[in-house]
Image (cartoon, rainbow, N blue to C red; front, side, top):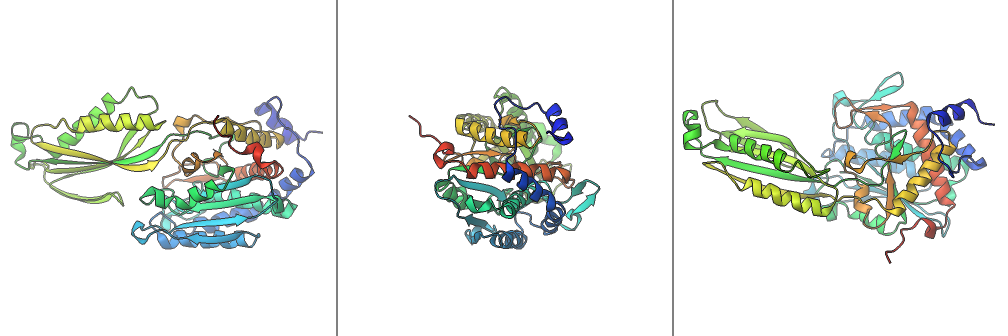
Length: 437
C-alpha cells in the first residue's frame, strides 16, 4: 500500500511510464538509515561550514579535506592527499577509494572542498528549516549528501559491493593553472572509472547531463594621460576605450545563442594596481585627468569548442579597433570545457530519475545546459558519462546570503543512496560508455 507521502509526491510529480517505481527491501532499509542520521548530518554540515575554506585559504581547504578524509577512512575507504605545485597557491585534492564487488561499475563521485566566500560573518546559522553560511549549499551541502548516502549504505550492509573513487578538488571555485595539472587527479580517476556522479546543484525536478564551458579573459587598456579638457581632442583615454570595447562585445556577439561574456571586475584611473589572480586592486585618480589605464576581467561561456573560437576571434577584432589615443589588448585563459549531452548521460539520468520516483519524489528531467554554471564534471566528460545535480537545494550560492534547505538534504541523500545501490548491482558494461562505431 502506498503511504500518504508517496501519494502526495506522485500527484505533484507524475511518475514516468516504465520507471522502477518500488523500493526493494535493501532500498527501504537505506531510507531508514538516512532518516536515523538526519540530525547528525546537519551537525556535520555545520562543522564543515564553520571551517573557512575559500579557494586561496590553503589551510582551511586542507582542514576540510582532513575532516572528510577521516570520516571516509572510518568507513573503510583509503584516502590520500594529492599535492599540486606550490606556485599554484592551491591546497591540493582529496582522493578516497573503496573496492567492492568485481565486475560492477567503477563509480567516480565528485565534490569539492573550497568555497567562494569565507570569514567570521559566514558561519553556519540555522533559522528553522534554513541554514546560512559559506558553502552551506555550494558545495559542503552536497558533500554531506554524498557522505551520508555512503553511511546509509554501510549501515544497511550494501556499501561492501560498491566500487567507488571520490575526488574532492580543493580549487573548484577558482582553479589553479595550468588546468591539465590542476585537474590531473580528477582526470586520472576518470580514466579508471565507468561513470561519474557529481554532488553540486540539487533540484527537486531536474539534473544536469550537459553544460556550457567557462573560461576567463583579461582586457588591459591604455590611454594618453592629460587634462580632461582635451579628452575628445587629444585622446579618449583608457576608460572610454574600455567602455567602447565592452559595449561592442554586448552588441556584436548578441546573436550567438547561449554565449555569454561577463565583465566581472573593472579598475581604471591614473594610478591602478590590479592582480588578476585575486581579482582585486586599487585605484586612484582625479576627475580632471584623462585615465591612462583600465583593467577589465571577465568570463566566457559557450556550448561547444567551435563557439569559443568564434567568440574569441570576434572579441580580438573588436579590441583592435582603438579609439584615438588609446591601445588595448585582450588575453584568454583556459577554463572548464563544455560538456555535451550523450546517450550514456541520458541513461544515467534515467537511473537517477527512477530512484527518485521509487522514493516517491517523482521523475526528473534534464536541465537546460545553458542555465548551468561550470563544474568539475566537465573535465571528466571526454572520458566517461556523468550526471550532476545530486547536491543540496538552496539559494544565494556565490553570495554572502548563501543558504541550504535542510529538509531537502534527506530527499537528496535518499536519492543518491538508492541510485548508488542500484548501480552497484549492475554489470559494468551496461553503464560504461559505448565506443563510437
